[in-house]
Image (cartoon, rainbow, N blue to C red):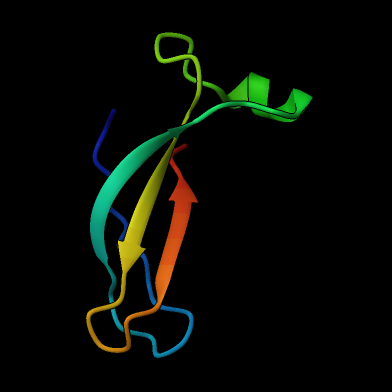
Length: 62
């Protein structure tokens, strides 16, 4: 898993969010299977939290 170099920006206040964790999401749709990591068997999702307002967010690794 490569570290994401683009910071995630808070949609509520515009501050750069802190990356807290990664979790494996099991594919459920046909499109998900195409983007799943073959070694892990799923899709890696990053979890972020805004240090300013506390908003949480996530995104899937490319």
